[in-house]
Every structure is written in structure tokens, then in C-alpha cells.
Picture 1: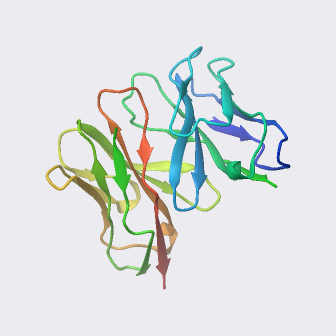
Picture 2: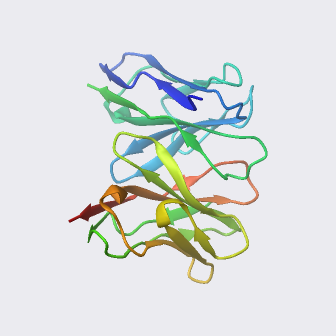
Amino acid sequence: NAGVTQTPKFQVLKTGQSMTLQCAQDMNHNSMYWYRQDPGMGLRLIYYSASEGTTDKGEVPNGYNVSRLNKREFSLRLESAAPSQTSVYFCASMGPGTRNEKLFFGSGTQLSVL
Amino acid sequence: AQSVTQLDSQVPVFEEAPVELRCNYSSSVSVYLFWYVQYPNQGLQLLLKYLSGSTLVKGINGFEAEFNKSQTSFHLRKPSVHISDTAEYFCAVSSTGTASKLTFGTGTRLQVTL
């Protein structure tokens, strides 16, 4: 059971380049999330998907788009990367019928935008 | 909307000493409270949670936390820490009535030394 898998683990981009961060979970969870982690700021929610076919903005959605491709996969796209998007990105999922009881996190993607 | 304050960004402690990591929250509605731990180069893992019932909550690895509604606090404690407890600890809150969106604090780095 792999849990939540994120790819890539590391990425360096130039300003203006685009890329997609991939996330997949094999736990049959309904809800999936993208967070960014910055020093001194904790984790901030970028986008989330409460169920397949739905997505909603979180606290810091500007500059990002998401796609809930199917129940397993939830991707995060940077259309035109900016240095302010240098961060560690975490994907997470949560099972059905829970009340924020437990988020399962991936191991993160370290992104640097030069 | 809710918010979380972790006043201590770093807490140094000697092995086998007790430790308390402080967390205060703000919310106009009833809340669920969580502590997550992040070991180096890993995603976050749930340490413990308060949903309802007893205000003293026990988690994994000997940690416990007490929900104090009057002081809007949810401090994390361990009577005797180990080197392996060195990690970043995040307090998080969500409102009981909304779909699964957690707000995280900025984190406390626990550094255990010999």
C-alpha cells in the first residue's frame, strides 16, 4: 500500500516556465488537497477537491490550477512559474465519512523557481 | 474562519526532560483540533486529535494534549522526550461544520539533545 505518491520529488524551473505536479492515492479516498510549506508560515492550502469532479480554492490559489483527473489523481499546475512559488508542495488525501480525522500526506515536492 | 498560533518557533530540550509545545486557536464556532509531526524530508503524520469527549487526548509516541476551551488552547506535552522526537510539530484546527479544511499553525521545531 503506497499511500499518497507525489512526483517529482525535486524540480528547478526558470521564471515563466510551466509544470505539473502529480499526485495519486491508492486508498480510495474522496478528498484530496494541495498545500505549500514555507519557512515560518506553516502549511497553506492551495486547492482542494472534496470529491471526484469538484475542486475549490484554498487560502493561496493565485498562480495555480488543479485537475481532479479521477478519484485517484489530483494534479497541480503552475502555468507561468514565479520565484514566489519556490516552496515545498505537499499533496494529501482523506477518506470518506471522516471529519478531518486524518490527512495522509505525500513526501513532498521541493520546487525552486529561478 | 479560524486561525492557529504557535508562539514558539523552536524548543530546545535535553533528552528525558519533559516538554510542552504551545498552541492557541481562534474560532467563532466549534472546532476540531490536531497535532501533526513532520520528520526531516517527510510529509506530515497525525500525532493526535480532539474531536469531542474527554479533553485529555493521548496520541502516538507517548504524546498527549489537553483541550482547554476557556483558554482556547491545545498544548502538546510529553513527560520524557527522546532524541527520535526531534521534528517539526504543527497544530491544526478545523470547524466542525465544514468540509474537510484544516488551518495549520506555523510549526514548532523540537530539538532534543543529549
